[in-house]
Image (cartoon, rainbow, N blue to C red; front, side):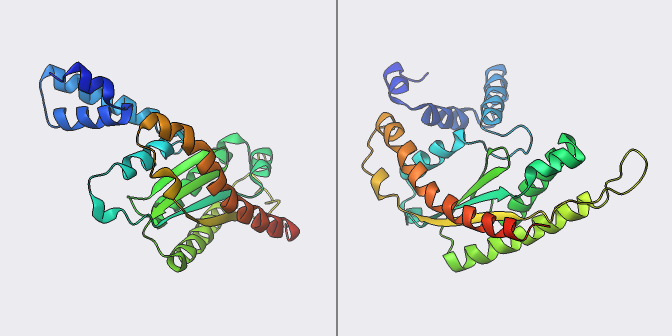
Length: 231
């Protein structure tokens, strides 16, 4: 039985990790209940449509990293990629929301294909996604993101070009659907002095918003260039 004082001093994430370790592989009734609880908790951090993490998982990801005992990984070489599907509204308008959902699933599948399991892949809302990577040089990250973008674009076009209307005619695709993205190397120094999770929660939103803003600006410029040649 865990001491109540220790329990009260834990963050939710620390408690979840404690429970996960304590009951891993335990097949008693209590263990099975806890394992079911952990599945429900993990599901609450996932996007229902794509299965990717949702934005709630972002703060926990960084807090867990900064409090990790495995110092060999503490290089702070983080990068952020923000991703946006251009002309997404026209997919919904032309083909319907079910096909729009399929397009979002294609984006998520492409992200999983080209990035690592240890990278944090998030659906940030709507047709916006982000990836947090650790120890991936910018040159490699640029290459991987471009390859991913091409793969997603080709997959979406292939999917849409097979769609037919109610009369059995192929639907004319109104646009070349593209991916816009921005990349930002992240500076974690402003987070490292946060000794408690409460302090971390106060600092993190503004810090992350500022870091993400740089990547978003680059993604917006790419989107503008795509719209200039929209077909």
